[in-house]
Amino acid sequence: MAKRNLGPSNAARLDAWVRAFSKRSDVAVKDSTRGPTWKGAPNSILEPKELDGFYSENNGYSFVWLPTGSTDQSEGGILRIPKRSGSVVLWYKDPGHHEVSPYIDGLIIDEPTDENTTFVLNRYIAGTRKKERVIGGNNASSNEARFFESFSAYLQEGARKAFSWYWQWKETDGLARLRARSLPPETSSDIIVKELVDRGLTADEATDLCNWLGNDARLLVERR
Image 1 (cartoon, rainbow, N blue to C red):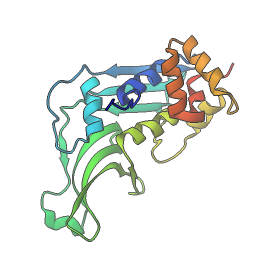
Image 2 (cartoon, rainbow, N blue to C red):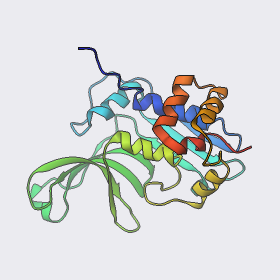
Image 3 (cartoon, rainbow, N blue to C red):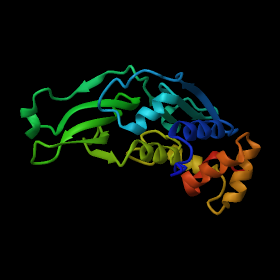
Image 4 (tube, rainbow, N blue to C red):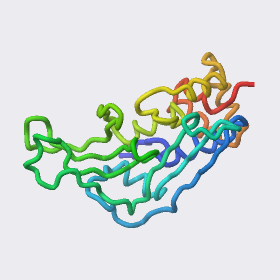
């Protein structure tokens, strides 16, 4: 049986997104660093296969942007996927504490700020001693928890919001201004693909980003 074509990897999509977004004339990229290919074993049994696949191509990824002329990071965006050597954070070593906190341990997968960190978490299913693995974190301000279906879904939503400041929890004025400076919402995907190709992406990369991001692919191109 022939292998099903799963399309570009998370690492390839993120790389194409960064290359396209960095071409915006109204954006200043302060950091765009990805680690080298990692051939070692996972550093934690917490890592889902899709995260293992990402690390096999990029051992960490840091991307920081600001609007041109701004020094206020809350106006821009941050993605900071740590290198694979990052440690596991132990929430509770004693399973007897599961009535107090459902989390047993967690592995950091994105740390834009100390107060806004996303983990792969091992947790107890409510009312049981059975465990499940989830991706998410807590809002340090409200202690509200939020979870994502997968690492792929996390990257997809982040890219749709340009990894803007605290995108996991709110839509900032900075994101609203970025949208206002981007191609209009009614812009067709054909036009966006052409714009992205003009910025150095291949036609396949441009088409895939449009399919992946939907209408939010317009955030990759500034309004003229």
